[in-house]
Length: 302
Image 1: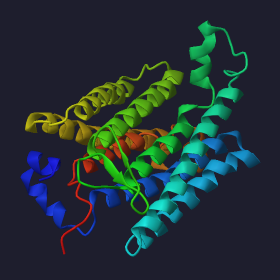
Image 2 (image 1 turned 30 degrees about the vertical axis):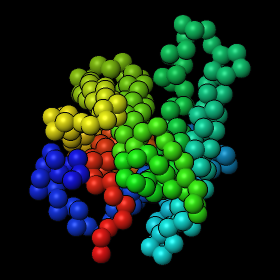
Image 3 (image 1 turned 135 degrees about the horizontal axis):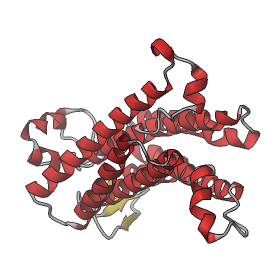
């Protein structure tokens, strides 16, 4: 029985789907790569001209997402080959994310001298967001975790190519909870830094902050619990659902802020105004958190 079924028994219908939990997780990771590329395109368009090196994460995100979707089709016939291909892409995602964060910090002059400590926070708020590229890295870690089969289930023993395997200190499900916690933490900090540019005066901006902090604690704690109770899982499930709701509400509020008179759309406002895709990162991690509750069995009975 999956954790989600323990919380919500009618969810057992999901077990009849032709996809396993990790296949759904890989699909989410692929779609996330594409949306990261699109989001970075809008972010880099603010200056009016996208420099050559700024195209790297944009192109990589879209291409990586498409390659991962193709790998999903390959997995139907050859799981080891698809896993190897996916791992190469996700490793590239980690590299792109770490390099992007480094270049953002260099551009903010926070590496190689840097401003006085008293000014560091202010610089971080107004400088290119160094946490933005790290979402590529987080998505890479999530994807690598999903790409290799855990056998036996909940053992933390990942089957690699051939007879090779690696023993993790905890199960893949618990690893997902820790990854979700880190992802939500990065999203919450990024949200606070973005909203700090407006001095956090709008009471609505405190909603994602409070929900994010609570979700970080809940998901991390569930990762530390080897055998969670139904109450533990219920609190976690409700929290992830709330996070999805916060993301959708934030998306609608950002879109509404960018509309001009009579609800008309001006593309320039969506490029330079409130980042309308940013709140959906909360919803994305909430959805990933819910998928982590599905049945961990990776091979369906025929």
